[in-house]
Image (cartoon, rainbow, N blue to C red; front, side, top):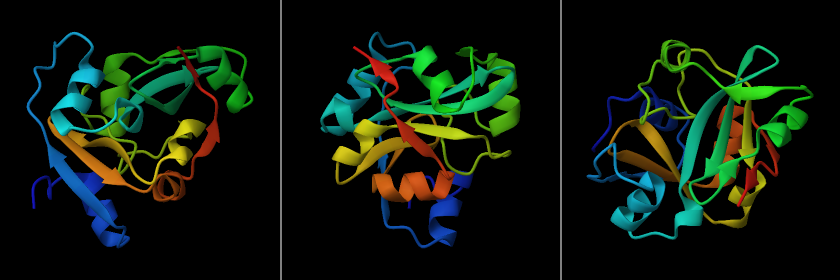
Length: 159
């Protein structure tokens, strides 16, 4: 099975979570990357989610939002009881999660970070998130994603 070596896939297998992996080939510098990935996977773009590592009041926090929208930093801060949010430094995000930018998964991170998933995920039977490396997505039920990441859900996007 493709992607068997990623910590995200190992976690799903260990927890016996129903999932499917999907390979895709999209240049990392493609304009509107998320929409291009959705097209490559032949799925509605609102079902494909990106994982963003942020800082809320100085603490690293993960936001999982659809590729069709932009992260509302104020909404994220409010969702975790903070005042100010910003995107995290790339090196800090990679070091803390154990993944490289463009392949950061909300699952199987080196250090479990507080996670907030956009509530729109719950409207779909399955969603797609990074499986832990560029070119590999994992499809799973949003309720399983919430449970495995111990996430809260909130309205996190604009657009």
